[in-house]
Image 1 (cartoon, rainbow, N blue to C red):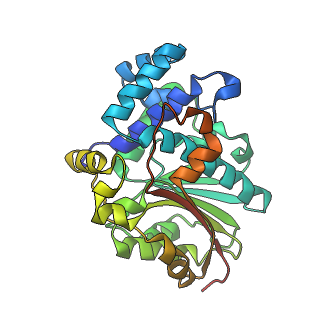
Image 2 (cartoon, helix red, strand yellow; image 1 turned 135 degrees about the horizontal axis):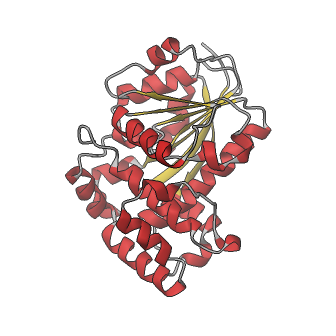
Amino acid sequence: MKKDTPSKTAQYMALYRALETRRPTGKRLFTDPYAIHFLTPAHRLLCHLASIPPAERLFYHLIQRRIPGALASGLARTRLIDDLLETTLRQGARQVIILGAGFDTRNLRLTSLQDLPIIEIDHPDTARRKLQTLGRHQKTLPKNTRYLSIDFNKQSLEDLFRQHSIDLSIPTVLIWEGVTNYLQKEAIDAMFALVGKFAKGSCIIFTYVDKKVLENPALYYGAVRLIKDLEAIGERWTFGFRPEELAGCLSGFGLRLIKDVGAADYRQQYVPERKKILKGYEFYRVAMARVVSTS
């Protein structure tokens, strides 16, 4: 990410959520009335026009040309993580930590989180922009949410937790969306080691890219263009897992892999009726792991 600027990918995800929110109530995957506040004036106008079906198809086409595959996978991924989060809450999670929060608004749009302690953590530049934007559109920030900042590649998350007295003994769900592919292995290992210190039964929901896309982008639809564009905006991908090795990797940190779903599967689950107008990535995955032992 370029210095002193918020994440571009966080802005794109806000655009996708705002577009989805303009769809008819019975046809949208989720409702996020806050996402539009993070957009440029031009993108806000686009979202308003997208409520007209012919315009929606045109905008889908334009986005597909600009960032092939991202829209469909991003929409379905958002809903999948929402559903996995709700599952962990039903199973007893009593604290939510959102790592690399970007312009995520789950603490505002999901009623199930209103009475739980929420901790959002992100890079200082993105966190600053988020709070400035929310401050212009919200009378008060949610009282149940703490907003913290860190550079995951340069600073210790465990030190941050200690500094702010974050309680690891509470059954917790951590969301780590759209982050691992920007980090180094050492930072990822440190994160999983820290998750393993949370109360038994705590969960982490995270995304990752198949390592093969970094080794040979031409194998995948949209990957060559995407990786080139990310490098141009200073958000280069640096890490991926091999799906067949993920369970073994996590077990070394006291974590058990519960779910690992590829983009093709979660698009089929959530947006099958849109597959003719929305192609998507095949290398992005969503996983969930549970703490089975504490160090």
